[in-house]
Image 1 (cartoon, rainbow, N blue to C red):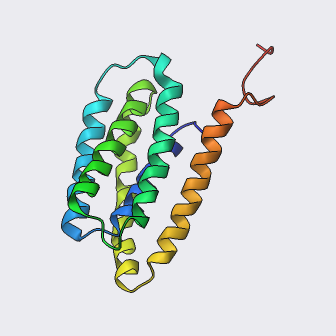
Image 2 (image 1 turned 90 degrees about the vertical axis):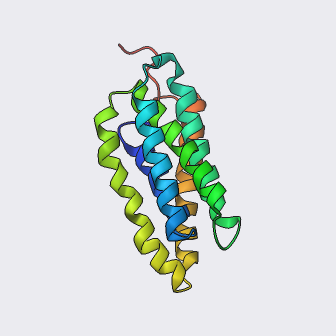
Length: 160
């Protein structure tokens, strides 16, 4: 669950779905905030000892981002910018700690989910995005608990 580009990709999916409930201008502003913040934070040299807290923060951010879909019918500018800064900070931190810096650029097109998402919301089918968002929340909760609970076979204990 915490391997490769999956956590970053799922946070970008959550953010793209959430931006579907914003105006096109606000969605673009939020996406720019995410991209700039992620690239700036990814350029930092962070310690690998912060890996577990960054994973937990990223998954909690994923849950909070999906929760923004339920705040109102239309996501306001301030929330879109704040969510973009938050998602960018966590994805950038993960990219800075792991060897995922180049992959961060490959994940950015996931934000284009906002295009079909806004089309669906405009037609009155926003509930479909909320269902997909619920799936993202379920994956995030599972990832948090699997990484925090000592599960036999999940972490190497005696086999080297």
